[in-house]
Length: 198
Image (cartoon, rainbow, N blue to C red; front, side):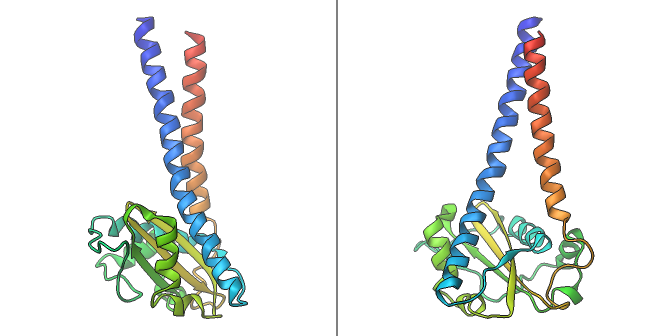
């Protein structure tokens, strides 16, 4: 019986560690792209893009929708044409991030597919494509980035009410990220203490 308890507890510990690791991996890819985009903008004497949590929420929801689509370009990147994904449930995605059309109309959505999300290819996909026009535009001041599988989505925001992506508080995604991380940390602590107790 004690052997079974220890086996279950060790399984919980490993699961917690792997889940925390996966959350950090996605954040690393997104942080790397944000750093690269801001370096690119600095070379053009433009201000750095600041993170907008609601835009990040939307970028994550869109990336999650796009992950079902294959990355078909064998040269390394495949940019989706246009700046507004055509999802029948787009209003629902906005709603999940506490957004509406009136506060997002001046923003821009830039999805891209890059196999394995290679950081160099991802950055060049944004800075050396039609997307560079948006990145060069001084009206964009904020950004949200989300990724799933081979897809990464950049949502650019403005400082205007029509493109600020921020009705009310701007902490939706931050809270959900803390909740998920705290859940895994608590699960890990319970498992460790249970293992020591047995």
